[in-house]
Image (cartoon, rainbow, N blue to C red; front, top):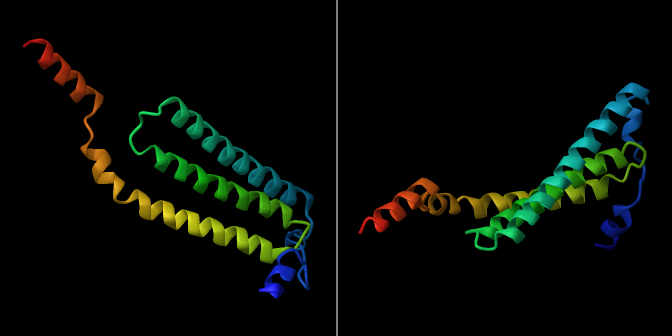
Length: 138
């Protein structure tokens, strides 16, 4: 375990990803801008979901939105790490972030699957409105 911890932030014998791109400026910038934009989007989506859940506390299955948020933040972090590893070959750390992302992703998928039938069983706004209309005629 201590070797893993030591290797976690060590660049060891590895070279930065930028060498794989032959440090071609346009190619490096393409990856920086793309991964940065993806990370920005991935971080803004959970912020919006969190705001939505806070404002709609009556929301059924609100916790799945929070789980989605964790999943999306983890995915965004992998893109930030891709930028980092252009210059810093800390591939053990990168792998750890990806492993955490994989665990969160799988957990989210497993938790989502049984919710689909329950969510589909909820009445739609049109069905609720029709039910209210039927009730007001009695």
